[in-house]
View (tube, protein in one colour):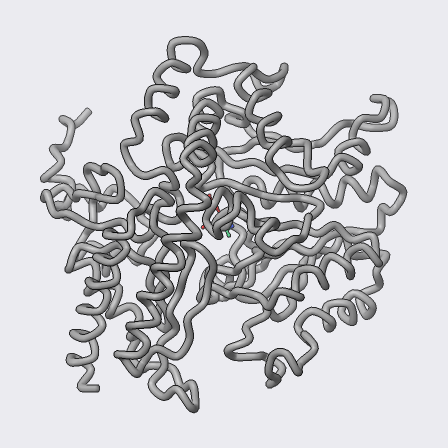
Length: 454
Ligand SMILES: Cc1ncc(COP(=O)(O)O)c(C=O)c1O
């Protein structure tokens, strides 16, 4: 066994050859980012360089890094129980967390399946929908409607529901039984219309799709209340209520993927509350344990859960599971993080600092002519870049990536894509830290524009 590799050596190419990261390897290894420490809204890499975390890692570190209350709760749990036999039952911390979620989730969302990551629960939600219809006399309902530009995770089922060609094409063929509709991208309406005179064709056309497919074959619609990967797709307020009505008319389950939007990010505990719509199934992960341990949860409404409680002769229960589901350490982290969010009113802080962040982005928009659109809610905000505001022609040469890379150089971590960038800082962020993040972005934009000769 090789000696342990020192932090400073972890960036050497000979050691990096042994690990796959999410980025393109050859490109990433030119300037490898290897984080060593974190505290509050700060990261330090192995070279001691400081970064302001405007992304919560990746929308995860909801209560900030190095939160002592959460760390203490995990330590105490290690002394009691670190693993319980999942094939035979569960443990008290999982039951406590399930009951806490049932209490906090809107409407009659009440029964919880725990897993470790986001893809595991979006995929569990898809399986739940199919099995639910089989158990309730509609076995022909199996199709899942997802949206283009969406992201529900990397496992094959979650990937099949997703609509991102850059992550799908290399893995095709996808699983069968999935189809896709256009998302509510008002800034670039796929139907060439304008809100509100459009009457929300993006929502009403879904009912037409269902009709053409045959409603008796459609099991569920899965959406992120605010889509992320398409550049933070924040729907008009009528959109999700319309989806709710369509689903109700056709006995189709509405699944909300709140893996990013859950646990305070949009200024309420769940985006379902922000939009006033109760889905049939709600999926959460990321911010739920703040990154202190992997955990995700799928929460379904009471009548759906009841369908899984029949006698064993007719009902096998919910046929879904993974070894680490309901892990006591992860559940202890989840309970401690949720208490932090509630007791420190971090949803309120997300609303207040989200408004400050949006105001900062608006100031940048007045200053830099390449900002075409601002989108988002609470501490989930994005900027789309355009060369020309009138024509909405995108900025060339992956401008957003250039801004994002410059931000890293200047010690700011944000999400970047060729045409947009997004901020999603920890919910504990202060006004001064928001101002500093916006100031760094301002500088990066100025430099990237100067480089582009604009
Ligand atoms: C909206 C959404 N759903 C699902 C997932 C998948 O979560 P995980 O990467 O934990 O499997 C992600 C991950 O980024 C996500 O953003």
